Each structure stands twice: as structure tokens, then as C-alpha cells.
Image (cartoon, rainbow, N blue to C red; front, side, top):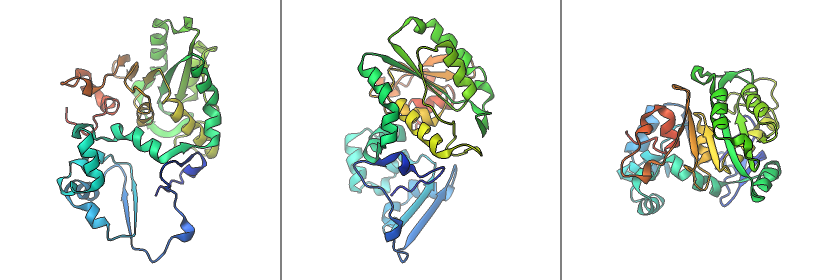
Length: 309
């Protein structure tokens, strides 16, 4: 079951698709045995349980298991030799190389099984999809700027202060301004950074209207329901791009995995040297590209969060 109610109930904009994951509190039996796990950022006991114990067998004694976590342990589950006799685990291991059984490889598959967009989300992206169907190409930019007036409770990212200007320089070098059949979609946690791109390409840019909100750290006074609609819609559009330029962000990295070809025309902004660099799939060659070692962001984009480089 999925029960996400912060900052608003996820069911407002994401509905069950092939699997009904809704939780019916009215029919929940209070006499059920329950295991509750809180593991945010780092929880050694939980991580050890996943990696080194028969946790699936242990958990079968409970009627309900509630897990609150943001830790990526997908690869660790498949690498745990003590659960190899599980039918679902074996199904994946027989069909997918172990090194590719990661959160970022499996995410698009699991996301589409679990979720479908609500009518509000579909309506919000309809005009963009219509442009694509009519032959327009979609260049996407995600500017994750960190703490700023639009996102005051977030961490600061000093090396991204000039990200918008550097990306504009890159776009101008590609003569994107002269490509009338190109639309530029922009998503950002900063209204100021977003406006810089829009001012340079006023006739080509597309943005989703609504307040900017950080799902984990929503600012006071922001309309959370409208803000969450914008977040979900931005996420879906970032999966429809022909070309993507991304700053370091798990949000856009996962959204990018929904693209039919996630690494086609994929670029990242490296704040350490203020450059735009092309990303490659580490699995297309026998040896991973050298750029994988450049900062943590490559580990997200290159789909190797659990691999040692």
C-alpha cells in the first residue's frame, strides 16, 4: 500500500494503475500485527536487515508493514543471497543483469505499473503533448537551484548560482533560437532562474503554471495543492523530452528515466566547472566512461548508485 499525505494526499494527482495500492483506513483491523520502520537518510539496523538477513521471511509474521524511508536499497535487496528463493526476486534475476537491478533501471517500470496521472495532470500536459504530435521537438531544462526566495527552506547550492546563465550560453551556441520547431520546457525551484530562460526565449518556452513548492520542505503560505499539481505535471513532462539539460536532482533524474531513450541528448550541468557535459549510459560499453567519477550527480544520471567506480 502507498499512503503519502505530505504535503497533500498523493491520490489527488496520482491514481492506481495496474495495482491497487490504496489504503482503506475504514476497514483496517486494529488487531492486526504491525511492523513500523522509520529509516530516513541513514538507519544502520534497517540497512543491515535488508542486506544480510532473510527479511522477507521475517516480515511474513506481520499483517501490516509500514516503511517510511528515502534510502535506496534496491540493489542491496537483489544482492542479498539469503532471499534468492523468492519468486519475484528470481524473476528479475533471471531476466535482468544484476548490475542493472538498480532503483534507476527499475523505476520507470514500477512507476507505470503503480501510477496513472489524474485528469487534472492529463489536462495540464495535453497542449505540450499536442505540440510534440504536431512535429515540434521538446528541449527540457531542470534548474535545481536550492535555497532561494521561491524555495526558502532548502539547502544552499553555491556552485549553481550561475547555472541559468551558463545554460543560456549553451543554448545560444546551439542556435536553438533559430529552430522554430523547437519548444523549450523549463522546470525549476527558483522563479528567478526560470524567468531568466523565459526572457531569452519568450516565444519558445513552456512552463507549468502554479506555485513553486519543495515537496519535503514546503514553505509557509504556499498553496500546497496547486503546488503539488505543478510538481507532478513537471515530472511527467520531463519524461517526454527529446533533449534534456539537468542540474543535480533526484527529481529530474528519475523523471528522465521515463524517456523512451533516457540517455539520448542528455546533458548535465557541472557546477564545479560551470560546464554542460553530455551523459552516457554506462552499460553501452564494457568499461564505464571516465565522466562517471565527476561528482555524485553522474552516479544518479548514469544509473550506477550502487556500483563502485
